View 1: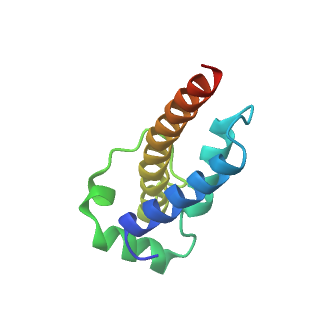
View 2: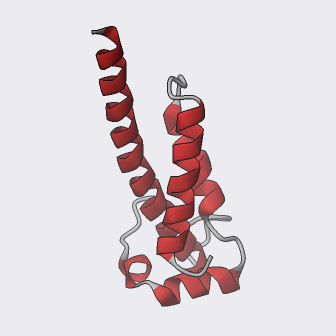
Length: 110
């Protein structure tokens, strides 16, 4: 896990697998948060490698407070940026998967 693209790719793959297994889950937003949270590296070295490999992470303007203990350290801010970037990708993909699922369900009813 050394780039944001790899992290997003892994997270999207997990989302697709879990959605496919249970497309009618009652609260898919919880799954998005769980996947995004588990996608954030916890070690400082890994966070630094992701930030170094991606200007998107370094230039991201966080909406949430700093991660982990909430201290405004650069590593906590990087972790928050990764979480928010991955979360947005997951929400975009979730919406797409839900639309596809609804279209499939409508075709089956016809």
